[in-house]
Length: 114
Length: 111
Image (tube, rainbow over all chains, first blue to last red; front, side):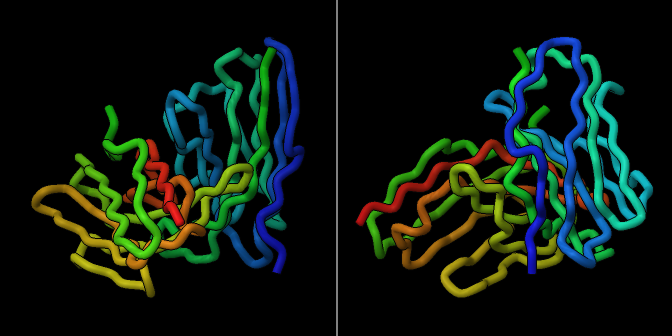
């Protein structure tokens, strides 16, 4: 069974640009979450989607947005990039509707903002 | 406001001995607690979890203990193996799959 797939794995952008990251969950998983990992702030929750609806949102500015498609694939977008947005962005999927927190993570998309 | 804290950034143990990783939390509303393991260049991997209504959960060499009165949980690995060397994250869940993570503890198991 294929795992969670994130693309692209690495990308470099400049300040002010925008970026779109993609995530394909494990087949059959309907919940997709996004996390940001930085050396200073650690792993922080961005948002969660379930059946195309945003179920939860973390404490990030409106420049961070996401969506989920009918096939459960998800994208996140960051507009007007800032240097502090440089991070590893992790996508995770879950099959269960119960909220146990057991997630399957992808390898992440490493974003560098210059 | 760090709701989940891992106070030890690193831990070194000898192969075959017990590894004990600790985690403290402040939010009484958390209903599940989890441990994830992370190798370099990989995403975190779920290891073991415990519901807030329990005080112990065991899975092979891994046992998680929850002390609700102290708002403390710990992960015991017995016996420790060199392949266990990784960064371990404690996490807590209270709504959907919105996890709050600790800062991580780097475990090094020496042969």
